[in-house]
Image (cartoon, rainbow, N blue to C red; front, side, top):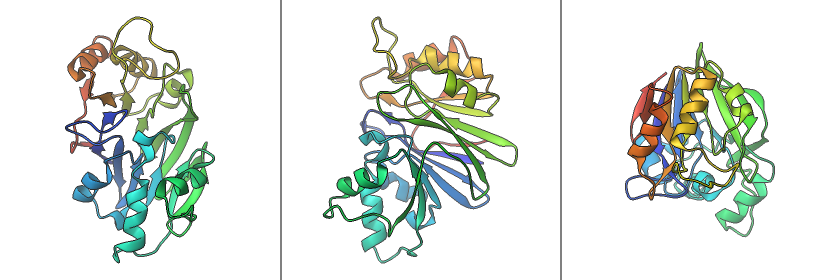
Length: 245
């Protein structure tokens, strides 16, 4: 299994990265985890849009789903799409919300996507998919992908969560957000600090922690230091980086 970071900036695009988007591949099957604003451009540098076999949206905040719009435009108007419908797994209401984002008179997106509603336990190509509800103000689901004995868990957006820790138990890699700086009086059930991402990894006993979703106004080195204070096998992701799992 290979993970490629298409975009990793938290809460919106930053000067060096698009918002959240991760390409996961195994045996020629390609899954996108989120498609946040700014991500469709760099996605084309690493994958033909027609080669994407499935899309999983953790939730419907713009920094995780907004570039569904150019993805749809490409499939409808580029002349390069095969026309096959792509499974899109997302929280309830995604079909209506995304049609509005695409601003083509509310036209349904069912010519491009086969919509499926989280939570799910399913098979997508070689991947077994499991999800768990996170601690976030809107419905959001962490995702676990398993293929041929290897496993990746993506936290989506979450505050500290027993459900996410359970989903991540024993995973080879945990791709976890760390959007909150470690300061007093943080709002609950919103995001993790670097230290909390490390605590999640330690609790779940994962093999590696990849820290992501750091906003442009938060010091990424401080987030990584916080994670490593409790989980030394932590790394900070960078746009364009790939990881074998």
